[in-house]
Each structure stands twice: as C-alpha cells, then as structure tokens.
Image (tube, rainbow over all chains, first blue to last red; front, side, top):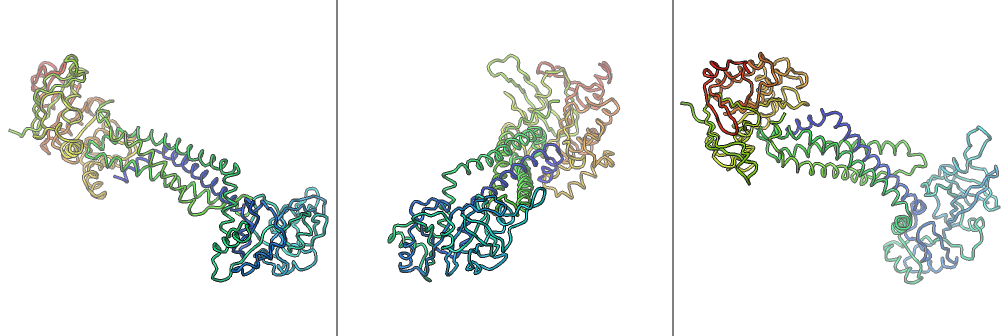
Length: 385
Length: 241
C-alpha cells in the first residue's frame, strides 16, 4: 500500500512538483545561508587557524577577538618565557597597514610579524619562495589571493590586472618592502591581503605605539596540559590566555553576540524555513484534503486509520527526502562552484544533517496536522456526488 | 431458504434528537438474504442513503437493531467495523470513486493489497477479474481515459474482487445510458449468482428494476411498499417515469 501511496503522490504532478520545489528551495536557502555564515565565522579566526604551531595565545585581558589588538609591553615576552612548563614563547605582531602600490593606489592589509629568529607563526604553505627568505632585507611574503586581486598591478585601461609577483616592491608606511614569496593562507573576514614579515620589521612598518607586542605565542612543554598552563600563566601574569580552540571560540562568540551578522543570517534561514513550511504545508494539506475521499475509500475496503496515517507520513517523508536531497545538493554544488571565490562557504556534514532534520520536521509536522483529518474522516462523503 | 444477511428491525434515525419531527428514518424493517437483489426506491430525501449508511456501519441508528451477517455493527469499535466492512462488504457508487491517479488494474488490486496479498498476486488476480469483465485492454488506463461504463465495471471489479457477502450499490446506473446500465446490472447479477451474495441497490432508475428480487419503496423515512418486480412491471414498465 505504501507503493500505492507514493504513486498517488507522484502522479498528482502539479502538487508533487510544487512541494518538492518549495522544499528544495527551502533546503537550498537554509544550506546556502548557513554554510556562508559558518564560512564567515571560520574566516573571523583565520589568523589563529594559520598559526597552528602555538598551543596558547597570551594577550591583554581586554581583548575580545583576534582583530581587537591591545598590545603588551615587549618585556612581557621574557616573563612568559620564565614560567615553568613553557617550551617556547614567541612575539607575534598583528595589525593593519596601508600598502601603496606602484601605481600609487593604496590598499589596507593585514600585517603579521613573526619571530625573527625562528620564524614561528609564519605561513605553512608557501607557493613561491621560502619562509626563510624573510631574512632578506625588506622582505615580505604576500598571500596568493591578495597578490592576485587587491595588490595586483593595474596594467592600464581595458587591460586585466597582473598579480603581484616575487621580486616586486610595495611601500608600507613609507618604507620599502620586497615580495620574496607567495603563500596560501585562509581568507580573512574582511578579505584584506595578508602580509607576513619578521617581528622587528613589522614594528618598523607599523605606526609607532608605546606598547607594540600584539600577542605572545606559547608552546607547552611535553606532558604539560595547555589548559593547565593557561591557568598558570593567567595566575602569574594576569594576562588573558587561551588555547587555540579557546581563542577561536572567543572570536566567534564576539561576532555572534556583538554584531548583527547572526541575526541577518538567522532571519534569512528562518525565512527559508518558514516559506518552505508554509508553501509545502499548504500544498500537502490540499493534497490530503483532496484525497480524503480516497482515503475514506481505503477505509471502506478494510484499511485501518493507522495504515492511512502511515501512508500519509510516507508521502510526507518522501517529499522531505527529495526536497532535502535536491536543495542540499544544489547548495553543495553552489559551494563547489564558488570554492575559489570571495564567497565564504563551508558545508560541514552537521549542517547537511541539520537541513535534513528541518525538512523532515516540516513534513512530519504537516503530515501530523493532516492525520488529524484522516482520523476524523466522514465516510459518508463517498456517497455524495 | 437462503441465509439472512441483512436484518434491520424498527430502525429510526433522527439527526435532531430534541424533537421527533424531521426524523429521517421512522421504523424501517428490512430483511435481505443471500443471492437476493433488493432495490430501494423513493424520492430524494426519503432516507434511502441514510439506511444504506446505517447498514454499512457509517452512521448509527437512533433506535432499532441492524444485524449484518448476524452481527450488530453499532456495538463494534472503529477498528472492528473497518475489518468487518473490508471482509464482508463491497461498495459501488454513483460517481464510481475510482482513484484518478491509479490505473484500472491498480484500483482493482487495492482491496487485495489491503487483505495481505503480495503485489504480484494482487495484480495477477485483478487482471484476471478485469479480463472476466471484458476490460483487457483498459487495465493500464487511468479512470479519465475510460468511458462511464468502463469506469463502473472497474468499480464493480474493485467492489467484488474480495467476494464480499453484501454489495451495497448507491445509484450504480444513474450516470449511464440504458444499454450500459443494463450491462452493469447484468454483470452485478451474474456476480451475485456466482458468489451467492446480497445486492442492496439504492436507485431512482426504473430501467433496472427487473433485476430486483424485491423492491422496497421508501417515502418519508418509512417503507411504503414492498413488491416483486413483476408486479411493478405490470403497472410501471421499465423505462417509464
């Protein structure tokens, strides 16, 4: 009988396609908006992601997220190094700087300064050049996306831009900088180019401030728990300390609680859900209402109400499954096609399942509403013409 | 004497329980036997369909007793009624009530599927039944691609494929012309004779009265007359208005 139920559903083409399309769009909107939101949130802590060497980040207590830099005195580095359980502690500069291109245009960039001696904190994927090339005078490493887009050289009217290349120069705060390498790092939240250089050279490029040490990167000694070490450093220095995961979470929490981003995306997702639920619900309700007579006929032939309810649920589940599959599939395809663009798109399997859950929840709810009508079928309608 | 299949005693039905006026049925007595065709005639609003609904257990009488195959349906719960109806009764409607999105074969196979037949067996048996009604080439057609007579034959196949003891027909020929109406009644009469079932037919159609063993005329919720078709034929020949 379940096959008959599905055939009754599918053969009612207009309603069937109406429901599948509305649920597919709903699933697409939910998947796409949520995936972009997750992608954006991942970009907020791109610098932390690209600095995997450190177990712990030490910073001023007032810092709310990675870009909210409140520098420390340079001497604090030595205090951290003296704490038992610290394998190494390295300076890390992070700030914004204006780069002047050869054509005279300006571009704001993320400037990251890493330890001069060890180069800890540097990019881990070099596409051109070596990280050690940073030891050359005025050397900087630029990320691939920045070099190809915002720092690309304008070749004149009507001509395409030429990516910034190794050996070319930029002007950073009136100082000369020479590109010695191109790296691949995670795109940032504000899509600005990322420039790596040594810590001391970064201080030279950056505008002068009394305190200049943005963060201290710490590695815990073997056998020492990073979480315990965090507590110890905080207790001894009164600085804020976070593990890598903790700092990522702090940054995400800032964007979730202090910006309108989650509300904007949340509303879009909610609208997708509501529109899908409303349209599918309405069509499915009409479908069941129109077929109520035939369900009554099944009842006359010996079908118990439970079987009729199950048939209706099977129909709803089939629509949910198709809507979920098509919508999420289209969302995933969109993500695949835009994988190398500015669009931040991250579709974890949990989101895929959550979208499915939403689709099934919509359809189960709608079918439960319809089942109430099935249990109250007035069989006398069959005798009316 | 054939066994009694339907036994209604002093059935009344009032939709407004406050007053005795406007009662739809007022003390109906009806007995039908195996291998018997009973036709209920009467003007619109006389209570024919109400009586049919009470016999089918879809409506409860206000008073009186209605035994179907010796059982009172009003003492059964919903589940028991559904099972009993599915096993004992077949229904044929004025507007056929075929499921428009299913083929003729699928429409006929539904009762078998509901009675636990495998798909393969159900479709094979349904095809065989349709063949016996001369609907070989129409099996894969949906109802909108069948003529009125063909649709009613499919509906008959669906109602009779489980060999019910009682077949309840509500105006089975009213949408059909005289020739097709006669053909439908002939089929039903043949099935009745083969399966020994009871045919209870609500009709306004005088052209088919000669198929009846008994004709009950209902008016104002009461049986005004019970006659043999021959008696009726003498005064009101089939086809007369």
